[in-house]
Length: 84
Image (cartoon, rainbow, N blue to C red; front, side):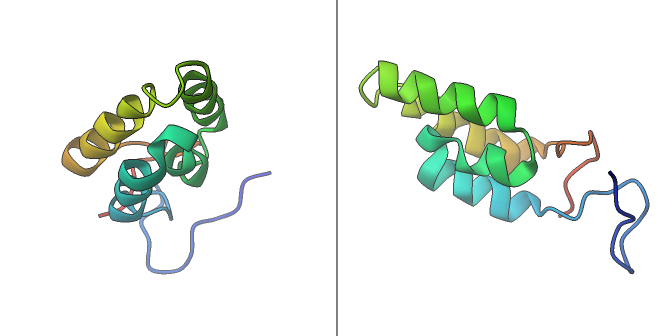
């Protein structure tokens, strides 16, 4: 079920913040927290598994992913661009 965006947001823009997603991903990216926040649970679970299997080394993926989200933006679980 999809809900309409909150008042004041364009129809095609996510209600999730690019800044929050990027910071969460930088700080807790090894656990996929930023991806879970964005609604991308598949990638979040994969990041969590990679971090566990590599004994923490895979958390570099989360750090790099967070930087890319802050620089390039991203999309939420429904494919809408994150708001600034």
